[in-house]
Image (cartoon, rainbow, N blue to C red; front, side, top):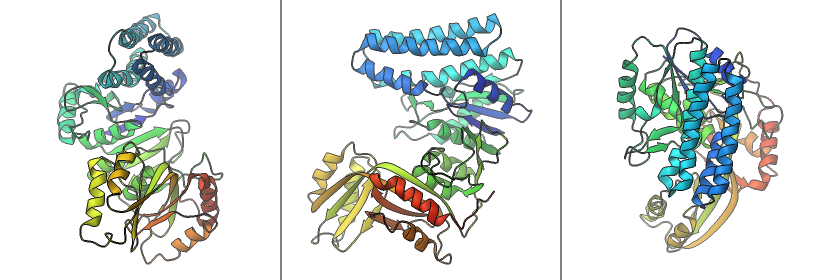
Length: 443
């Protein structure tokens, strides 16, 4: 069994859907996980925002515009009048459902139902296309088996059990189509795995199905050694370990959802990052195998807030750090980086929703300083002690960049620095010139 996940750009048009259909051919059992068509989730978020503001006329206009876009896709995708009618009837049902929200109270529960429409549409339209072309397949509703618990974490045991129940209904089928991103919560309501969650869905489904491989198909040929949107001359990395890929995903590599590595790692299932536009490209393979002795890649995570607590009286006291961390735990705010000195502790967060409340509590322990608009630059590779010289190359490349914090030692795969976001482009460019000039792509 293989899991193939296709992102929004991969199913973003009739032409792209045809390409995906050609990529999933073959007799090997597969579960194909689809995102919403590109642009759809953003449009649905905008619709939800207008509904929250009771701007129902504006919401209706946005719904009509999105409906028109899908009508055009239907016209281009299908060749028979029967399938065009079936697809347009489907659109009418879904978009009438959206319009119904303009006539009633709109809450967070309704918002989740609105955001689910993109994946429900893409999978249904794709299934119709397969039917029209005589390709046997089964549409497997993700809402029948994907579930998160009361802590908004995937219920792995439930997913594995229910997925097997669903698959057992079709003992002769080898091709299944399902939705990424969407799920049910502990109360049985429609919910989701947050933005980018289709990767996570694919990994969770792969683990539940004991898959041989999980493939993540996007519009770029694997994970690159630096951000190709900013830096020229980047290249795809042929192989990464699970830990290396997790660090890169968490610290800003947009090609992969940060949580999606864990389920695959737990079941030791290789993950391949492939390009729908260039299916012959090698891409990136993520597995338990670690290739040591080199710097692999750089990633950057924006939207970081640095918090410094200065307290000469309390810092070395027993339980001080625990008390600080408990503040963040109470507000369910994860910490990205941390450094300490004799009189201060500095840390970073990427969610400032409760920043004011956190600062107010931290001020009980000492003087608090807050720096916004920071960026974490993460350099990933094999930084065990015997591979000396990597740190020197990194900091020589960054010698003209003011560094706010440095983190090293918590992981053998990661050296991270905190910089002002205004210096991000220069930092990534300097690193690309300074640490990869003697490193050739491991293709």
